[in-house]
Length: 252
Ligand SMILES: NC(=O)c1ccc[n+]([C@@H]2O[C@H](COP(=O)([O-])OP(=O)(O)OC[C@H]3O[C@@H](n4cnc5c(N)ncnc54)[C@H](OP(=O)(O)O)[C@@H]3O)[C@@H](O)[C@H]2O)c1
Image (cartoon, rainbow, N blue to C red; front, side, top):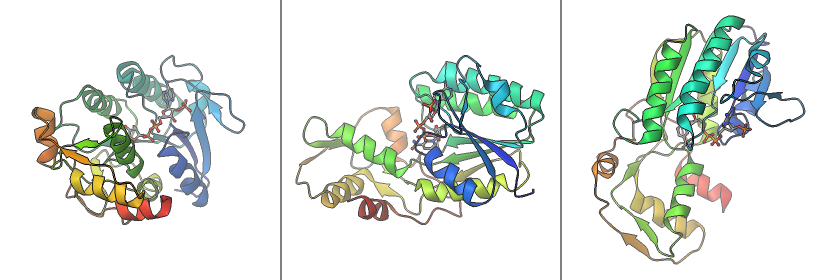
């Protein structure tokens, strides 16, 4: 692929998008970031209504599809992706790269079920595709810890296992895939280490110099059991190289 290919990035304003856009620009791509708001130099489109999508995909070689709405995944992710694939097909886009989540087939949760259905939409969309399932981003792991510590103590299942990944590492992986032909395959990409929530919480509190108590509960239920068994982790290689502690050290 020539270095001047045009790449549409949906979800460009999001956590991962903020690392993917500069990475693609660094590699010489003509990047077209997409958002629902009016923003100078960006294209405006809405997956939920379809408004602006035809213009957004016009003249595009590759779409990196990151937009998602965990609160409204049926209309935005599943149906919105159907609209995006239809527009991409009409415009002759050569490759749609979709970012999904490791373990969505092992952990039963409405958002994950919608992601699985969205993968099917991508596969059946009639445009060459690549699907990358990623593990939780460092920022997401931290957001979860903040939410779990709202009552005061950090309330966790200490044995939940995750493999958080740096968005910069994932952005490099994605940029590499943009430069190669669509694979029609689903691959996985995770962080360099599997951590328990106990470790995650302790290192997070230590990095921020906080002395809050940690309440360790065995959270019941199928979802919790699956996460304890490592359903959100992957043995796939290569992995990212930046660790959770690197993320904390850079931030605090
Ligand atoms: N967070 C994680 O730990 C994690 C792990 C693995 C995989 N993933 C996947 O990676 C992708 C990116 O995640 P993220 O955490 O970076 O997302 P995010 O920060 O929540 O950003 C979501 C993005 O979706 C866009 N969006 C929402 N509704 C839209 C609509 N109706 N039309 C067009 N765009 C819309 C938003 O754009 P505007 O507000 O600018 O319109 C925003 O840029 C998602 O598919 C997610 O499932 C996430």
